[in-house]
Length: 339
Ligand code: UD1
Image 1 (cartoon, rainbow, N blue to C red):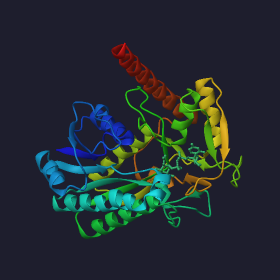
Image 2: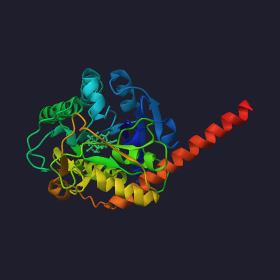
Image 3: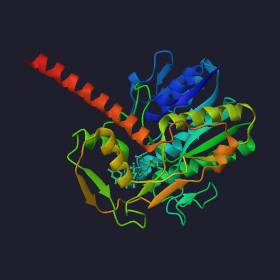
């Protein structure tokens, strides 16, 4: 019996693979490598290159590897990009997830864990949101994920199938052992971009909006360490296998940090200053978004271990330093060949 991880070569998916292998689970990764990396999947996990929307391929994987549960990460996940290419997001996220869920139901899969997002809330009346806060996504990314939540709820109502949709807040940091991290070259995540600025890989960090109605005028988010996030997925699998009912759960720490707080934490971790450039607000950005975490803490046996902003930025910085060293070594090899 195995667990199928879609998007298992990506940032969060690859951390999930390590976590499950550590728990002695059998893992099959399905990833089209559009943003993920084959090297981030350990050889003891089975790797299949392909698309979650390919029903024949997914059927074969489920049958060949006796898949009993699916953890579905594969998606496009950059808010500004979704505003430029909404149909691409509805196709890649919503339509392909629909195909995946159909295949899962046809093949009798019983448990499904879905990567949803805090972007389903959009602009809210309160900064701290519960799962029942009205969902008014302001980006196609958020809408594309909210539609999948609805599909799962309808699927669970008519099939012997339970699911949990985890609404991620801002995932950051890297494997504490330094094996993997966020490696997408053009990632736009604040903590990654700030680490790159601190290493001189960017001339400055752009701050999108300093006139929000927040403590220091910059945007506030609930940053959660990627290792705690994947531990929440493990706890979710356990909950579903024990017959837990289908749920939607906020997945954050319940603590907000502003852009300037992140900047200071990264500067401290790097022990280096870097330039800031103040720019207008970015389209699709709410002022603040913080999880109310009461429900996830009550529902799952989940104890976060890395709930410390400085630890998150330190792990993110270590990974960025590793990537930068690798890139230098590659450049040196190329130069040596040319000479
Ligand atoms: C993130 C996730 C999204 C997730 C959502 C949940 C990314 C790319 N997207 O979006 O998948 O569903 O959280 O809320 O991580 N900022 C700057 N300068 C930068 C980059 C960001 O000032 O160069 C600011 C933003 O305006 C925002 C905050 O930092 O206030 C976080 O931005 P970002 O890391 O891009 O994540 P979200 O847009 O919140």
